[in-house]
Length: 218
Image (cartoon, rainbow, N blue to C red; front, side):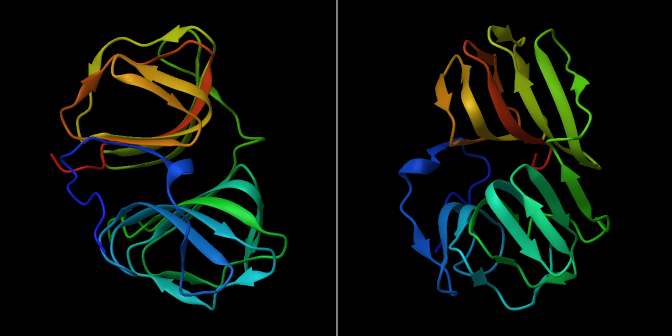
């Protein structure tokens, strides 16, 4: 099953409107946002673990990135409550589970083979930094080559100048409503803007977004 595999195309999805699909493991369901193949290759999805669900130990050939949206995610290395961001580098493996259930944003098979650094950040207690314009606060999560990942908080009424995206931009709206001249994007919206695209973003009510830039083909 291929879904939104043309990385040159703009994609906007209300993830809440995507039907849950079963995974190979009972108790774990997914809302696919982009997918190269049924159970392999580049994948972005919202994943829901029922209480007591677990996966057997498995390998991530091209890595995995997780943002815990709700509940507590776990593996043999620890427990990760809502707000935790994790990066498991290429070649890593683990046995994930969730004793009480959780909701995750997950990206698979999108890292380069030389990206060897694991990441564990509790975004609830990490130090935020001022953004490029008044009203923006930024929490950097990862930076490898041209790819940069962060959480960005927009105070109500914040506006950013028009700009283009070298290497594209990917956004998941976590809280509030993100906006640009093409529309309004409430919490749960996933956007993928291709290389060379441009917009003038703002947020009237304020919002919190996950952002990854510079990772799409030029």
